[in-house]
Every structure is written in structure tokens, then in C-alpha cells.
Image 1: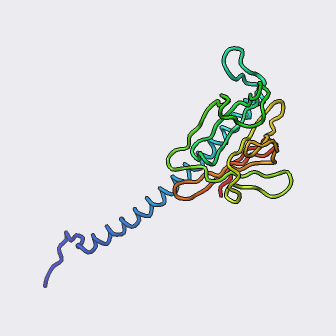
Image 2: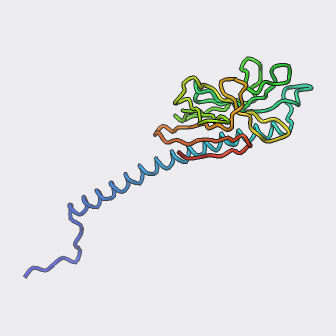
Image 3: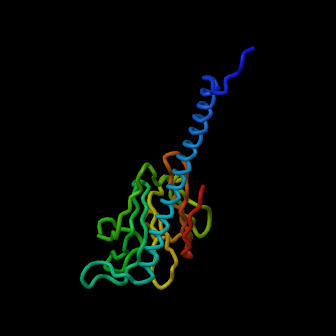
Length: 200
């Protein structure tokens, strides 16, 4: 009669099965971790943009000086987004013409306060504006809509939203940011001055 060894181990097939299971679980965890990290980065970028808009709002209603020396104290401050430059948005001081301002960013008039860059393959893919009457207008449905300006001026925290450098004021705006994986999030600005981030 044959006696069993007290020191029996794993067979090669058992080791291969356990290794295969660990490889499958690890690949699932790593794939989900990359997707989760991308979603977190996208939301962080959207919140960064929302904070930049809030910063412009604070500058606009607190009468921040723009320029050196005596400077300009009556400037409104805003955010300028252009779909043709999907990785940059600009905080600007509205001083042109003659220190009065026209409600929009004028690139050749030294109105830029800070240009902020979106990196890592993330980009602005759409801009939208909601008129006082009627439905929302977006670049995706109207390629003529190429730029949007959101201006804040004292004494109220209200946002003055204009498109394409025009004089018409809109009820609100949305800036849509997309990740390299195709996930999207929107930064909303209402005419009442409310700023929020909305996953899409």
C-alpha cells in the first residue's frame, strides 16, 4: 500500500489557473482605474474653468485695477472662449474702446489678463449660448458660432454673455470639454451669475 506524502504541493495546472485569474482581475482593475482617472481629470479641468470664471466675476464686481501706474478701475472682467483655439481660454479686462469697454474680448487691444491652457489631450469641443427667447445655439449645430464672451461688471454679479463679438446679450452659456476617451462635461454660466459644472 502506497502512503501519501505529507508535503504535497500545487500542480502546474493549478498554478497556471491561479495566475490566469490574477492576470484577468488585474487587467480589469487597471482598465477601470485608467477610465476613472480620466473622468476625475476631466471634472478637475471643468472645475478649474468654473473657478477661472468665478475669479473674473470677483474681479468684475470688486473693481480690480487693470494695468500699471494709475491703471483702470472701471473695467469689467470676463472669460473669452474661441472654438478655433480649443486648448486655451482667456481672462480679460474689458477696457476697449477708451476705457469704457464693449462687452467682448478684443485681441489686439491688450485686454488679456491671463491665458489658461488645457493640456493632456483634453479640449473644448463645443460652445453654446441660450438667447432670451428661443432654443440654445451651439457651434456643433451652427458653425458660424465660433466665440463666446462672458463678462462681469459691477455692481451686480450678473453675467453678460455675447457671441461672435456681437452686442446681443444672451441668457446663459455652456462650454463643453472633452477627454481623449470621448467623455464630456459642461461648464454652465447663467445670466444671474450662477456658475456650475454638469457631467454629460
